[in-house]
Length: 93
Image 1 (tube, rainbow, N blue to C red):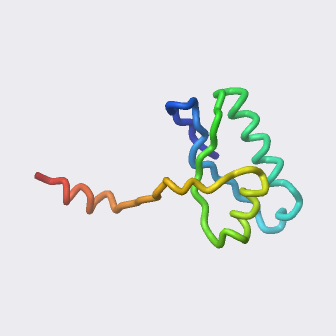
Image 2: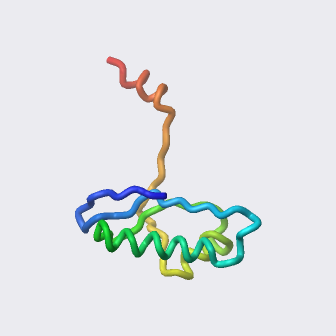
């Protein structure tokens, strides 16, 4: 469901993903699973921070839910991606 990354301010839970089938949504299943996952990350790995990326309109789900539980938008982070084959071609000397 996620990874653990050592960081200067302690272990971070990274790239967390959780999906619940449509027929089981709106029953607090995802919230309970997410809570348990965070509790275990603290207990087992002493994680202090969770970092993740999300999508969509800031006023709608999922961003509204993340804000509701205390997440904030980091204005300094920039998400970048690249096609690995293209990067390797450009790095060829």
